[in-house]
Image (cartoon, rainbow, N blue to C red; front, side, top):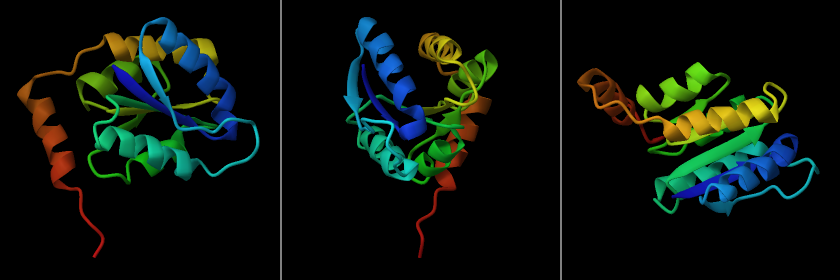
Length: 149
């Protein structure tokens, strides 16, 4: 499995730890920066990761900023992306089962790195629900994607 990962300056240290964690588990990582604590604009990295997932160059995207909110908003601007902000074990599981998230975001100022790693582990072990009600809702999300005119 290929995982695209990106962060802004607030998520840089978490990105390094997450990358090591995932590589130890045998995942292939595509790193879309940033590569330091120097201030950068989070949308730039979010869009790179989201496009890699959208174009099927990566199977999953992981994004980290201070809150995870900005990354989630920016990633969800890319067609076909279902980015979910993960803040708990419950959101890690339900974002996969109910929402079929293909990008997950985290806040380095919200959760500890130990929590984030445990949430990633839960997300990775969880299967998407094949219940009709969940699939219908995911399909509706795609239906409501609109192009700017």
